[in-house]
Image 1 (tube, rainbow over the protein chains, first blue to last red):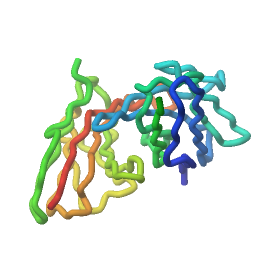
Image 2: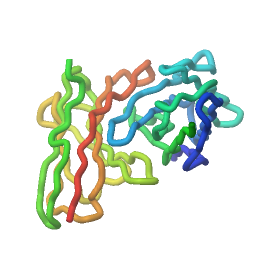
Image 3: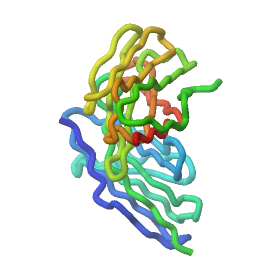
Length: 112
Length: 115
């Protein structure tokens, strides 16, 4: 069965510092991968997605993610974090009928 | 274009009461889904539908029923609410082009508390 692991429950980053959120997946076929962001009390916003092709994917708000098949990873990165990036981030893999299996999330805290 | 709309946004139920959550999408999507979100658990699939009149169980279907009588609507029912069903519920929809560049579009969520 497919699964997604986000090893870090919480991460604290200083404003202006770089960010990397880890995501590892388990899926038998070519994975379709997503990163979503959720601000407190809000819905999910799609940051970026990987379906095929270039393994470095650009998303909104200056985020990017790199798909590494050999490591079964899809880590999210941002070169310089802003205070408004503080939120919870979810990695997900798509399965049959476009259902999604989500990781448990990583809460990003941004310190001044 | 409203996208995916969930009704209601907030609800408090007493144990044993019943209620229905409504999800409506105006994008002519074939597929629709209900997820629940609990702290530290991410989102988990409750039920989904691949077309009008069809439904299927997801990862955590117990205690819920669903119906898809119209293509644009997907209803989630709780017949006898339990405190364990306190959660935030998200509806989503997507196109049916499997293997193509499709993504799910999410509603804003329904926060349900069962006391």
